Length: 141
Image (cartoon, rainbow, N blue to C red):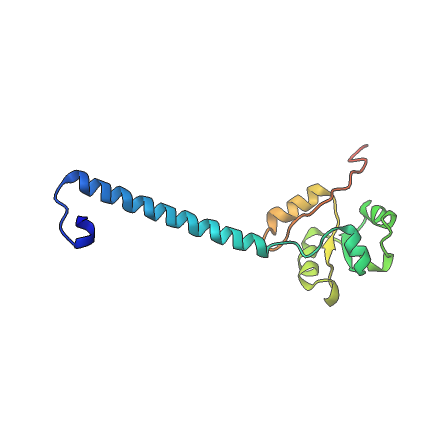
């Protein structure tokens, strides 16, 4: 009651309760704000590409690492070979993905999982790895 009417708090327990209550309200407000901004951000970060079949159906350009066995996999998945673009290094993926399929780049890059994880570790802003992951024979010698 004393807080609402502007009277001074004279007892120490009352001061303690008001201070604790203020911190609780501050923490709850911060938590709500963080949760709300996280929810709104996640909704905006949905990938623009659904899966491999969507890329094929829409005639999108797809990148792959030059000299990789991934080219054979993409051909077996019935990609139009004219829609496949080879890239020499992982760093070449960034401008290609930024341009997009309609502007001389690619809609997606298909590569081996370890290389894509390295790419995402270096260029995590704006890129995501989506499934499905196609199993291969692996790195056998």
